[in-house]
Length: 253
Image 1 (cartoon, rainbow, N blue to C red):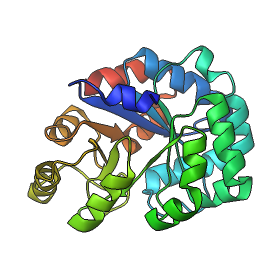
Image 2 (image 1 turned 90 degrees about the horizontal axis):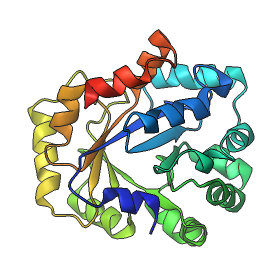
Image 3 (image 1 turned 120 degrees about the vertical axis):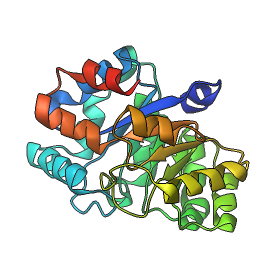
C-alpha cells in the first residue's frame, strides 16, 4: 500500500505543508522536509518551481521565482532527495506543472520519483482524460498516485469521474481564486464543503487554498480529511528563515 493510502486510514485530521523546493535557499529542501516531519506534519507537498505558475498566488509565485534564481532544476531536486528515505518516513508528493515533467520525460520522471521514494504527484494542468489515455499506465507502473483537483465550480458528474479515477485523496480547492488569496472561509465555502461531504465520495478530500492558521484548518477539516497550508508557510519561511518551523506547526495544531 502506498504511504499516502496508509496515512489516510484512521480518524486523524491530516496536516499537509507545501513549499517551493529551493526556497529560501537552494539547499534548504531536505532540512525543511526533515523538520516538518519531526514537528508532526502528516505529509508534504514539494513544489517543483516553474516560470509560469498559473494557479499560484503572488507568495508562491515569488518563492518559485527565487528558487529558480537560486538555480533549482528538476535534476537538482532529484539529487537533493536521493537519500531522503533514510531520514523521512511520511508521504512526499511533488506538486508542479506538466511542462517540466514533459521536458524531463514522463517515464523517466516517474521512474526517478519511484527510485527516491516519492508517493504521488499533483499536476494541476494535466487533464483527467489525457492522464487516463496517455499516462495512467506509467504512473501505476511506478506506484505513483495522481492527485486530482476539484473546485467549487466543478460539477457533480465531473467530481464523480475524478473520484472514480482516484485512489488516494482528492485535492479540494476551496475557492476559484489563486493560492493565498483567501482571508478565511465564508458561507460560500462552507456550503461547498458540505455539498462535497454529502456526495459520500470513495476518496477522502484534503482542502487547499486559504488555510493559514488553526481557525481555518479547523474550518476546512470539519467535513474533510485534512488541509494543506502553502502560502502562509512560505511567508513564515520568508520572515523567520528555516529555524522556526516548530512554532509554525504548533500554532496550527
